[in-house]
Image (tube, rainbow, N blue to C red):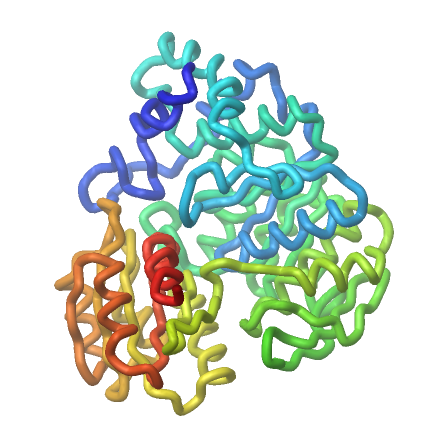
Length: 438
């Protein structure tokens, strides 16, 4: 495959994230399986057998936890591959080694055998965009001889392409209600789905705080379970001007008064989870200087990211009710009493009224409804109706995300603009917000 054609070829496949090639309304007849990804891996010569894998599963916090974990392992002397999703700007962002992104030439080279494979596959066996990217990531990691690959799950756990990688360590960040079209609208059903990513005999770092959600993971017969609040967690956490000061503990160490360059209160838990996982993988505590260096340099683009344009704009990719509740709590901590404009766009089969209610939208808020460029976007009329139903003070509609952000930012320098609802909205908003700064 030539470099110029790699993205055109990939974009000719079903993409469940963006809704490309998915039936109208996003309705599916069955949950995903690993049958196709296993065939792709065989075609590539079983690269997953040459790359030790740490899988990061869960509903919220996966990407940040995976990034912290990869940075800590790299700081501890390992060569680390990182595979995350979705991307904010360019799809290549999903696949990196020690912070260096895969090139189009490298991606084309690793995909070449899969192009040939597809010519002989039946229509039912045709891979999805995510399955191809997952296979390509693991193939590249194997070719580059990484010491370990940190891989974020895509769609739940059971049947997700990443579940075929045979992870020796699985990190579970949280259990919430997501992808209801596949896994239902109960937390328990989502826990069962997430637990499907755990191979029998693997070690599990379990950061879900609700013990009622633990049985599906324990039922996978893990060789070891490291549990939040018992084996690891956050001992202290306080906001400071540019981040947080936290004290974290793991089974083998404590890290007191660490500066974490992330604003949101949930990031302390993500950092503790990543440190516990790193300690398990290294079979020793992480050096204190590595922890402080990584935490002090962290960036989490689009995750409770504050930019002044000159008015304050807060961007967060919260996309479900649990994440909206956490976002509301973080906003109270940092911006209690500040008037705000909420720019919101959503995707999939999510319930916008529940999301906006959890966010605390009320009579003091101006809500601008927008739509990311994906067939899965929640219709603007439905979003606007939900905003009115929860009692928003004023509701407007701007179909284009960039126009919505510019309209909000121009309204009042003292008003906080909150951009949220989907990482696809954040991806489109980020360049507009940064242009407003310059």
